[in-house]
Image (cartoon, rainbow, N blue to C red; front, top):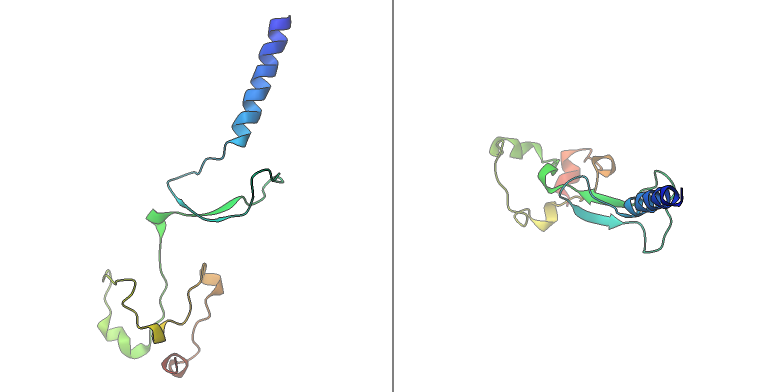
Length: 108
């Protein structure tokens, strides 16, 4: 009987240890870590924000006169955009303010 109790306790401790081990669902980069060592999380509380390098995308708004010079799948170096043309960098598309007119873009 004692062996059965010890095995049950051992299984319970193993389950608790598995809950302490945080594993990312894919290969990723941690952008924001919202906790410190020793913090206790509530159920469904956000632990970290992950960036999946294989699923990056960019939304770009350009002045209308540039449309003739753009093409699909054209490569662009990260530093090739003139600094005066960068309107904003946002973490999500919800926080991007789209320019209301061409004049608003040309003033920058």
